[in-house]
Image (cartoon, rainbow, N blue to C red):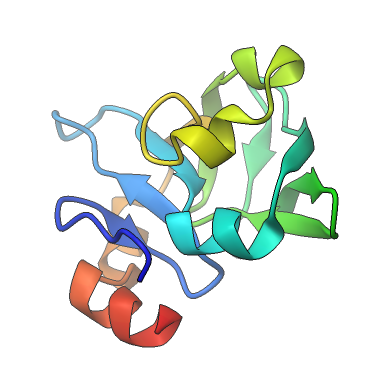
Length: 129
C-alpha cells in the first residue's frame, strides 16, 4: 500500500500539494508515493523555470524513469516560485523521499479557489488503490 499523508492535498494525476502556512505563501508540489512506485527508478526530471506562468491541468514537466516517461501536471494555476534544483543531479530523491527532499516545484497560486478542487487523503487513497 502506498503512503498517503493526511496533511497533503492530491490530484487525480498523482501529484501532491502541501498547502502554504500563510494565505499568500507558495504551494509545494511533488509526485505521490504511488506514482514513484509505478514509475520505478527515476533517472531524469524536467521542471519549469522559476517565474514561469502555469495553468491548472497543463503539462509543466516530465519525470523519466527506467520504465517510462510521465508528464507532471499543474495542480493549480500560478507562477513557479521555486524549483528543486537538487533533482538535476539526484533525480532518485523522488524515489527515496517523494514527500520530502523529492519535491518538484513551488507555485504561487493565481486563484486560491482552485485549491478547493484538490483531493483529500481519503479520496486520493481510494483513487490510487
